[in-house]
Length: 238
Image (cartoon, rainbow, N blue to C red; front, side, top):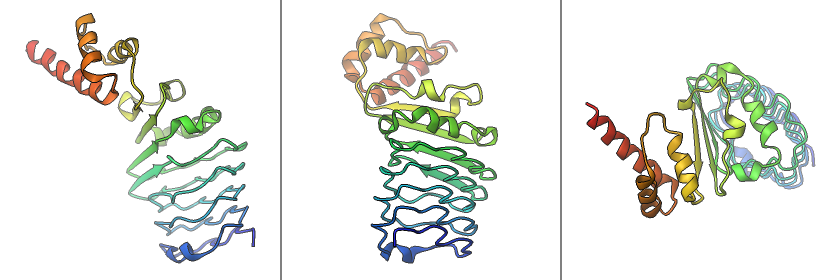
């Protein structure tokens, strides 16, 4: 069967672990597959390699704390896919690292009411490079609801010298809610730009040169250098 639409509609159990044995390799549509599964907290990994429609797939899964690993390389419709997900869970950790949106044409209301009443929402995108092309629409949906932004932590990781800042930057998000990680090497000019983003951090060419030599452009080491010298500056000012 190539259709799994509404397969678990309104199922009230807290897990569906047994579906890991189901053969879903030929399924092309999972529309509303877990729609209104209000008590579901976990979902095991399932084969979604040929799925093109995930519309409303997890809509209403308000106690879900995470999503399973999904192959979305062929998906074109993700509208309302995560609508209401984790709305009543204590903590929602949504790892979007393997979410390929390169063929998606509809993301409308994708994150509507995401984690509305959750204590905290953490969104991890470990492959920001891979969602290039649909990045703007993808993040626009994430930034749509103010109540999510008040408790949301964005973590974007990219392996190229690219930042998510152009997409994430918005007056709705406090600087403490945004972490932009790059694991690509920084040039000396980029290191200087990196230093400038730290408020009240004083530095000169000598420190930039030292940081370039010591870190070899590694952003993680650069951050430690900033924190070390920042503490020294604060100590000297006391």
